Image 1 (cartoon, rainbow, N blue to C red):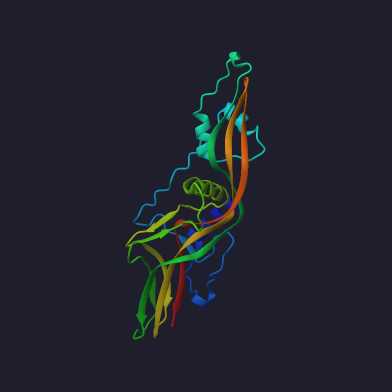
Image 2: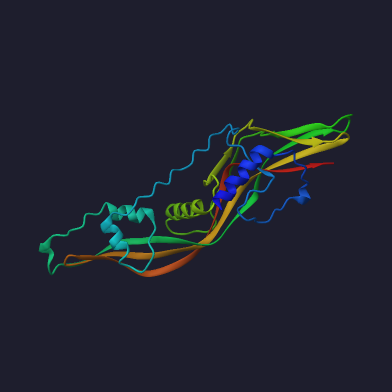
Length: 263
């Protein structure tokens, strides 16, 4: 899928011709994660720099990986893995006969996606108009961002440990879709794109612009995590495992969708 998206982007950058799309022709339903021909990148033109959050998740240390594998419940929460990485485990031979169970807390353990799709017209961010009613020749209309626009995403339902759940969802979606994603996308004032739309004489042209967003739906597993030590053996015990449905909107940064009409 990533290769297909990169290929589409290259083709658009080289061969993109002026578009004439009516509002009725635009699909406002959810689409598969492929780049439609009325969607373009403005990464080089955006006057606001969308700084993406670096998702540098820690790799489990060998002893932690062994602990994670000691339970049948999938654990991928980077915050929990980081906590375990920082935990000092006693492997002394003098621990014979010693037994303990330490409660580490209630954690979101993993996110399992059910459906991931893209709404290329998630939020309207701009509208440009060109009046050619009195003209005697065709004119050209292009995209010019009139005001700075902020598009906010996030979870659509309440869950425990929201930030950790959002990080897991974003990580999973980033693995599936080759688009710049973040829970906020900003489109800077005076951002311009030199893609022209023809406004014929005796008509008024209107160019509406939309921000896109990924809709992620899935389930998060929660559980109470215990660290059990018995002699030199240590293992993770996960109790009271529950599952909760979750939905999230994740805006696409530096991409816009055009809807052009002239009447």
